[in-house]
Length: 131
Image (tube, rainbow, N blue to C red; front, top):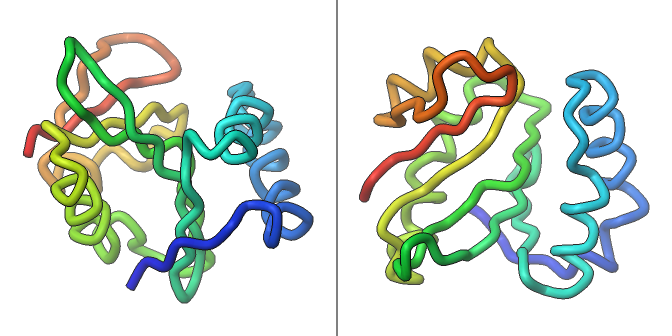
């Protein structure tokens, strides 16, 4: 189950994880995530073994849900939490779920969960799932 939590209560513990992931993946996003959470454009959700940052947005005038960041200390997080991400998207009337990643190892799990890669050769890939 995903539980919404205020960013201010968890930033000291979770922001270093976001920064470390940014450094490891050479993908600059930590400040953008912090700003979105601080200004409440994005929302922090905790799960028993990790967390996700979800950003409601509009694409071509339609609502979408962007997974800005997700982290899990356990395995198979996409398989285990995709249905809850989709539930949040449906609750907001989203047309789909999207994410950007530089982690090539996520490809099979994303494909298995119905995502389609919309960028071809880019190092930072865009994935989306129409709901």
